[in-house]
Length: 191
Ligand SMILES: Nc1nc2c(ncn2[C@@H]2O[C@H](COP(=O)(O)OP(=O)(O)OP(=O)(O)O)[C@@H](O)[C@H]2O)c(=O)[nH]1
Ligand SMILES: [Mg+2]
Image 1 (cartoon, rainbow, N blue to C red):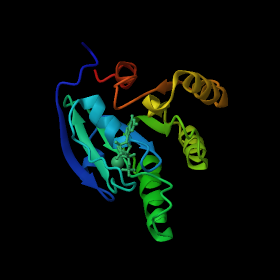
Image 2 (cartoon, helix red, strand yellow; image 1 turned 90 degrees about the vertical axis):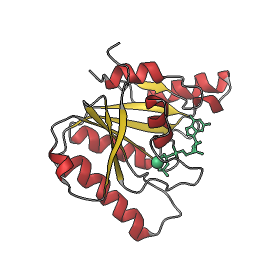
Image 3 (cartoon, helix red, strand yellow; image 1 turned 60 degrees about the vertical axis):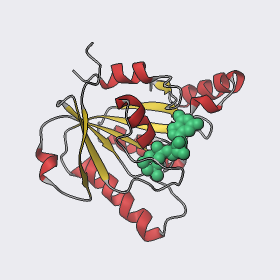
């Protein structure tokens, strides 16, 4: 099967420039608010606890690279918008993420922008989408933690999310139930 993950290994955590960024293998970036479930989502895709996840927001604070099927990198980013961090820390993460995405020259193939289906879009998410669009980085929206919603609420929330950005695909997802996993794997197409 073309989209099956056979091997997934942790490679390196970056805090700035590194030779790894000159590697020509495509990079797929997982981004979103702190605690939205980026690391858990990577773990659910690869089927093992590779990325560090935590109940406490602010767990991931470097650009964490995982090599998938020896072909592409999954990159777990620090979360943005975590209010308990100092202003300086927030600025540091904002700059690190923006540098990596938009000026480092890394061959980014796709950004997976993860939002919490219950919370919806925050200002940070909207800003990220604008920047990704401006820099012509293709992205897909994942509405995570879908397991938390009852059916009626879920239909309503997903409708609202899809209506906000008419031509952007929104994938309902749950790292707990693995809902959305096959759909997302097909999109990140690991061939
Ligand atoms: N209900 C539910 N909880 C989830 C899901 N995915 C993640 N979580 C929980 O959300 C919390 C944060 O998960 P992480 O994967 O560490 O989130 P993150 O976005 O990587 O967080 P930072 O690294 O701090 O930015 C943990 O308590 C997870 O168990 C999901 O699909 N459903
Ligand atoms: Mg994380």
